[in-house]
Amino acid sequence: MGYAMKTELVETGLPKPVHRLSEEELAEKRAMTEIGAEVVAYMESYMRRKGFVQLMPVLLSPITDPLWPDPAAGIYKRLEFEIYGKTVRTMHSMIVHKLVAVSLLHKKIFIVSPNIRLEKPERSKTGRHLFEFSQLDFEARGATSKQIRKLIEGMLAGLVKHIGSSKKAELSSLHASLPKFSTPFKVLSREELEARYGTDWEEELPKHIDEPVWITDLPREFYDFEDPVTHKWDNFDLYLPKRGELVTGAKREYEHSKMLAKMRKAGVKEELYATLLDLAKDGKIKQSAGAGIGVERLIAWITSARHIGEVQPFPKIPGAVYEL
Ligand code: ASN
View 1 (cartoon, protein in one colour):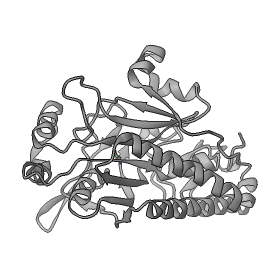
View 2: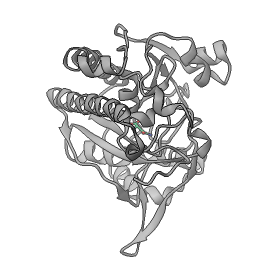
View 3: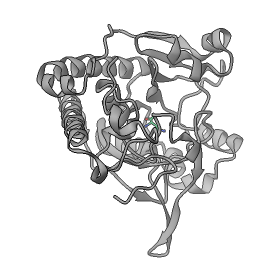
């Protein structure tokens, strides 16, 4: 695999701020952001073709994703402050807004959603963490996890083909080799992975695959569906070779009693989710399924970037606050 931006990573292992790039490095950043723009445009038009209505993102709200319990979470600080006499939080993910919008507004919705997650500074050199990123976040009323996975497979296959034909010059200037894969992707359960690689499977798996793989049955936040009898979780992640997680999604809980019980079990403050719980109690939250695709992670995969901050015009790397 060709690695882009070798030069700018040499000294610190981190991408440089844009105003410190050489002419040659600026040309690489231009190619990277040009491909990035095409990736977003392709995904937006794919979702619209599939009947999803695009909503504008929410950045501040009393309600956001608790990101807990989630074994993969590495949050070092949660940002909350007061405006107009109310406490608001920066958006971790629009999951709660998605559940409400897909129940009350449209059957299918998507948002290119900027999220702020203050990851621990020791995640600066993982090459895959950012403290500001965007996800293509979507939800479909009445859908199954399998339907959502198929939709994503179709999008990724079409996207790689499209970028390969429309961004040849940019790809070759970055020495990027487009990912090769066939669909449908393999589906593995967490149980199988734990048997094969132990509890460290999240780190191990990406080293042992050469095509994307779905992982199912991941115990995590209250909003993913857990079978009350088998205790299996109807949710999934998509793992990429070498790079790890790209997508997170699930069929959702919509029943008041189940959501409340899970919040209590996890120690998530139920009063923060009162609006969602009230709507659920009134039967207004509908069953849905959906997912979020990490936009920068997707662009980094497609452009063979070594550090995810390379694909951002203004890198937002945990532990490193640049001037811009
Ligand atoms: N967007 C993800 C989902 O739809 C949730 C997340 O980002 N934590 O499941």
